[in-house]
Amino acid sequence: AQKITQTQPGMFVQEKEAVTLDCTYDTSDPSYGLFWYKQPSSGEMIFLIYQGSYDQQNATEGRYSLNFQKARKSANLVISASQLGDSAMYFCAMRESYGGATNKLIFGTGTLLAVQP
Amino acid sequence: ETGVTQTPRHLVMGMTNKKSLKCEQHLGHNAMYWYKQSAKKPLELMFVYNFKEQTENNSVPSRFSPECPNSSHLFLHLHTLQPEDSALYLCASSQEGSGGNSYEQYFGPGTRLTVT
Image 1 (cartoon, each protein chain N blue to C red):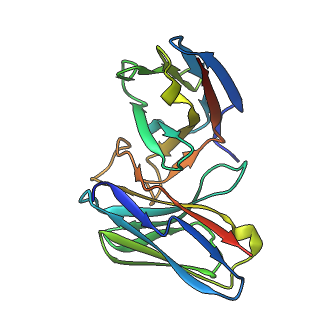
Image 2: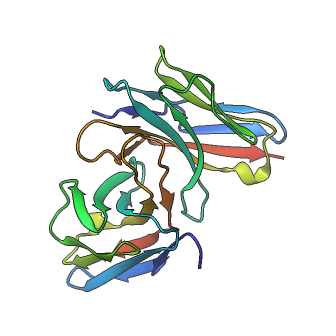
């Protein structure tokens, strides 16, 4: 069963405004990590931000912040002051610590973000 | 060269051809990965190599054959592919430690494969 859910296939945002991209996850492991990646049309997956399941504070990296709500199993990405260059696919991913292949990432289906001038 | 590089960037091959995809990471990482990205599907992990040893084969058909000669290079050998194998193939690397989940993977630009 898919463990990462991104319910927004596409999103529009005006330049300079903030946007939230949704991600929910399902795991029975108490220790896990959550990642967001950006994929421009060129194809390369670019790492944006990481949140650990035991982290007390929400992760922030420049204009990116992760709204981590553990009880709801959600890890939404917030992009502040959107720029035209933010137009891309955004993927949420999870990594669990149990089992032999602990470096296995599971990805959601992605959200296509279009920033409008 | 920096980061993760992949060659070729685009490849068109017939179903009877044999070709190879190459990935090289310049980050000093100890783990490398192959992913397949098809249209409208989540990114699928194919193979994982930790310290040159294959630790994950995610039920990939035998027409895909990985090779990891050293910790910096990863190949994906292709033979007798099917049209449904057309996809973007992404390589990634990471630095794995003794445990934990904070090790982000760094991706290459991908090879766009078309099987005719």
